[in-house]
Amino acid sequence: MSLSAYEDLVHELARLDADSAASSAQATRRLERRRLALAAVRTELDERTSEVVDLSVRLRQSTPDLMPSNAVQEAETAVDDPDAALAHAETALREAGLSLRATVRAAQRPTLLPDVHHVLRELLVYGACMVACLLGQLVYLAASGGGGEAAWWVMFLPPVMAALVGYLLVGAANRPRLPLTDRSGKPVKAVVPHNPRLGVTLAVCTMALFAYFAFFA
Picture 1 (cartoon, rainbow, N blue to C red):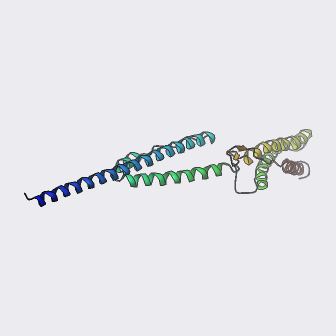
Picture 2: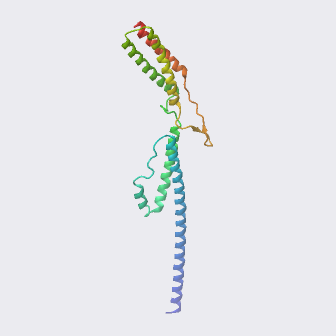
Picture 3: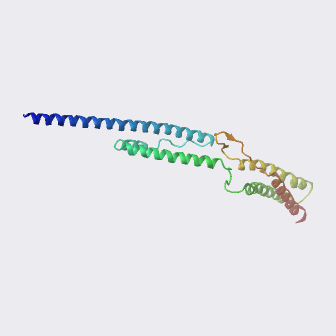
């Protein structure tokens, strides 16, 4: 073997060693990036899991299945393309965070008919109580066969009780399931309207209707 051919082989071996070292360094850097990305995904997944469990407890709902049936299959396919799997996991975690925040915002609104004005909500609740009260009064009127001294008590007491029940139900309907929070995350006491004057007005109307059917009809 000539000297020039030997030198060419030496240069070729040196180039291959350099390429191998560069490839190994690049693979090491890629592996380190994947390790850091996986650690970040695991941390965010733990945070999301804790938030979902905490929100389920606060809303008194059963905790959803946090390990779906296709998770194992996705983990097996991730071996072939770990970068795509990590990107998919990060996207899914961002979407889960947005969905979680939307759920919290929805739970911070009134329990019953959150999109309507509170006066309409109170009117529906008080009105339902008074309709039930009037139906009970009319059933009593049909069973007793007319007026009498007891009819005066039936005219006054049931509407008053219905107004009290409506007051409690209105408080539950206007109260959000989760309290509002300030910028620092501390709960803010919600102002829950009850509008008792509306309940009293409807109670008086119920008394007048019963009096009409009992004494004048």
